[in-house]
Image 1 (tube, rainbow, N blue to C red):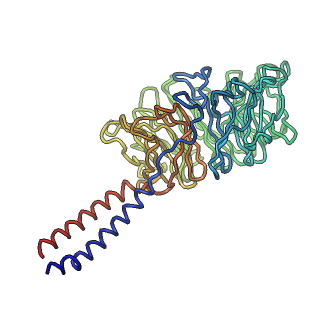
Image 2 (image 1 turned 45 degrees about the vertical axis):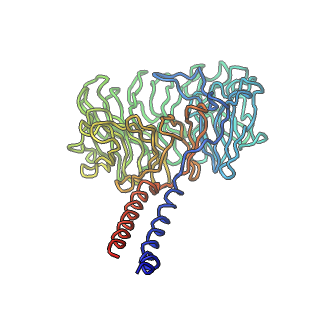
Image 3 (image 1 turned 180 degrees about the vertical axis):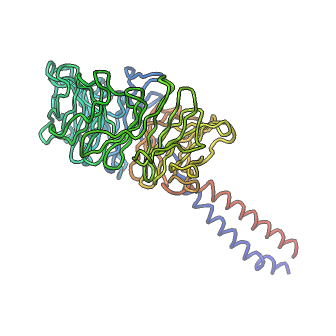
Length: 510
């Protein structure tokens, strides 16, 4: 009897235990832990450049930039020897290195770079601004090698530079803002060309310039704000040619200009909202002709608390929020017609929602309620389709959403609950498709992950683990599926407990 028990009765339980352990082992093996890509400045100092001059209310602005280009990553860093310069990560080999020491010595060419939106990518090539100590801050290009890194054009001769930046690619065109030669052109859009760059259009002649600012891109048309000195700050459009660059409409006659509080690419053009001047209104304009259409005018109190804002695309239209002075933020929807611009009854919030992205036909945003605090919401523009996507912090405690990154099937985002370290999540816009991806910090402490960029299945970001200073970190992501441990460990332990209990019962019966 004893021999039969030891040899035969344990065969099935042992096999089951092996199966369960096999299930659990891949779960542990598949967890993607954050990893330090490179300790560029050894010690507690920050290798990712933090410029003391880069200060914006109410906190200092991170001066480094991360930007994905094809299968690689460009970023600005300071190793303590070369000063703040351009660096590159090869996504295939993982090799990290300085691209070019544009300014030999500890000064660096990126010391004036305080704008995370200053760089751009075209055909895998980085378009960026740099100050080589001779030409001032001017436009440069790089393929990730020293030999392939060069000045595009000395737009404003002299050490002052043109302050080039904000590269925008649309259609076959790349535009960027820059100031022309002193006394001839202020800050305007310039067009990238094979042999350098040329002024797109001197919208406001003189040293001041029109100070163009991007609003939306629809196909081969860029909509932007600019002030020509006659009509005030109004909406313009361009197809990338001087002849195709023009004022859309003078909504606010005179030099006062129109105040834009939000915009979104829509249909064959753009939808936008105005604040107070000329009214609180919702408009749309097409890319192929001038003029705008008023969709709705809102009777709101002309105070700073009143606003029409946060436009975000959904299937068949877009959503936005309207607030009258100190009242709640009401959810509205529009299909681009006057009749189809209506309030979504019953959906309102006491604090300003913050829209993230449009994912699979729904808009994602953070919103605050008394019952749940600040959490992640989704909306398709209907009352039934507007709801909390997930409550990360139980009860009235709020969740902090630090940033989001688009993916082919949804959105990656960082969520922080209470005093815990921020975690990486993925969502495809549905409750069941909102899944954990794992930690962003190497320990339970808050490493303050910022400035993310996704290269393939690797997420790069700046973080400070309290030991190395702010450096470049990375973690692999399983986009579209949950990290294994939160679900399989639980299930595995339950199965293991069940098998062990069956073994114990079998032994007792014998």
